[in-house]
Image (cartoon, rainbow, N blue to C red):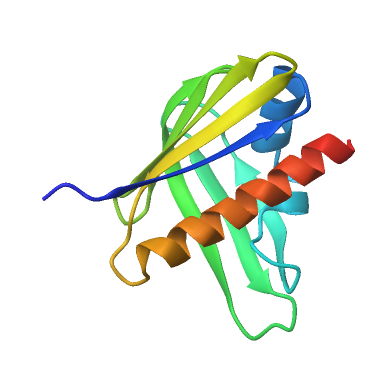
Length: 138
């Protein structure tokens, strides 16, 4: 049975190259990859090529919980698209598109079975919103 896809979108007031760099550079990922201010991303690693690994450590700031979000890149098309296959087999595909003086970022990902669709969408959207604020502040 096919997994349900969830889509999140944002438009960022920044050039495509800066958006791409913010999305793919480990030192940038640690600045935005969390859904709320009581969480952080202390470490990120990317090997940005097909077959390369991705890992971002996500932790509650109070130390009560943390996990590694990991996957392998299935698609890397410079300044256009990235597909990540997560360790549980789900996929997330992010596309980047120039839209006037904005860069549109669109992520479609396979839902998991433990949390509601709304919770998953809201959490991923919060992370994407953090990304937007991070890039626009640079």
